[in-house]
Structure formats: structure tokens, C-alpha cells
Length: 240
Length: 83
View (cartoon, rainbow over the protein chains, first blue to last red):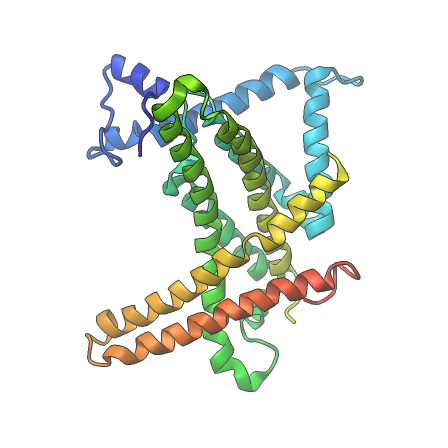
């Protein structure tokens, strides 16, 4: 289900760019102008601009903007250190922190009328999840080499024919569950808000759902990051 | 952030995905079985790989369930133990 009004799509249409009317565009330019693409770019520009404005001159005694970022970045750094160790945190902090900020902002932006969450499209969440999934295998191979396969063989050698498919399936299930959980939660929030807005928007019917939406957005971003950190930590550990 | 809410986030993150992971494992097992039957063997082995895949999928679901429980039970004592 589409939003009734999408500001960026309207602006782009006024500029003469083709906006797809179905969920998927036909030509390359239409695919680029799909709402989830344009809003992804919007979130990226928003994050870069806000970072530039608040952190352009870093001072010894932090001001308002710098204080905010120090709180968030410091909290995330401690959290990653606790869950996956210092080494991995030093290597992968930029990637996971970017994911966290991007997903949080992308979830919350859907609460503003005229905007939509890019994460309410399965394409966005699946892309994020594939990056995380491939990265955790790369971490495993770099940490253990060929012995990484022992992660998938179970504890007893006799049971390898039984355990290997099971481990493989449960590993691929991570790909599915991580992407569909984020997509499903945010899409449900967006759809519910849209329907309530059309039915009884004049009587503030979407207001309670909007409050829940703030909670869902923040919690889903945190859950995605927590699971990412847990998977990276597990890939780095020794096989049981 | 207050301690209570961080703990809640931890619980949600650790246990909130049990249902989805379980179902995803079953569906991937079933889908793999159906793919083997219909595309790889052209329907000659028709119901068998579907059933085998379903069984492996259910087993994988339970295995991921036990994994979640075991890692969480082991966590408070020593975080860096071997699984």
C-alpha cells in the first residue's frame, strides 16, 4: 500500500522525472525514482548534513550538538565492546554504527506526514541483511581459515551428515528472519498509520499508533544492531 | 539510558526473534526440498525430498531455538566461553 502523499515524489514529478505508479518501475530511471530509493537518499543526506552541522568544529568542552553525538557514539562503542570484543569493534564500528543510525532515522522518518520509511520496502532491509550476512562469514573465514567449517559440523563427527544440513538451514534462516522482521514491523506501522489517517485523520486516530511507532522504530533498529553484533561475535569465536 | 530499558532491549533482541527464526528455518527446509524434487530431479522423486527437507527444516528450527537458549544461559557467567 502506498502513502497518500509523498513530498519528494511530488517534487520530482514537478521537475519532470518519471515517478512509477506501481510498486516497481519499468525503466532504469523509474526504478531510481521509486519512493524508497529517493527517501534512502534523503536519509543519507540528512545524516551527513546533521553530522556536518553539529560536528564541524569539535571542541574540548562539547556544546549541545557534540554532546548528543558523544552520548550516542560512546554508548554504542561500550555496547559493541561488551558483546563482540575490542578487536572486532575497532574494525567494524563504523559499519555497524552507520547501520544503527541509518535504520533508526529511516524508521522514524515514516512518522512524519509526507515521508515514508525506506525500511518499509523489503529491498532495503534485504540489502542491509545480505551485507551483514556476508560480512559475518568473511569474519569467520578470516579468524579461523578453513577451520571455520567446523562451526557447521556440530560437536560429534559421527553426526556430521545430520548436522551439516541443519546448521546450513539455520544459518540461511538468519538471512530471512533478520530482513523480514525489520521489514514487517515497519511496513505494518506504515500501513496502519496510512489506513487510520484515511479513515479518521481529522479526529487524531493515528496518534496512539504514532506513539507506538516511535517505540517500534527505535526497538527494531536496536534489535537489528544487537543481532548483527551477536552474529559477528559468534563467527569470531571458536567452534564448540 | 536507564538500566531497565537497556535490559528490555536486550531481552527483546535475544528472545524476540525466536518465532521468526523458527518459522524461517522450517520454510527454508521445505523450500529446499521442493526445489530438489521439482527442479533438480524433475519430479521423479516427488514427495520424498520435500519430506526430508521439511524434517531437516524442523530440526534446524529446534536447533536454532536451543542455540538461543544455550548462549543466553551461558552469558551471565562468562561471555567469552566457547559457545
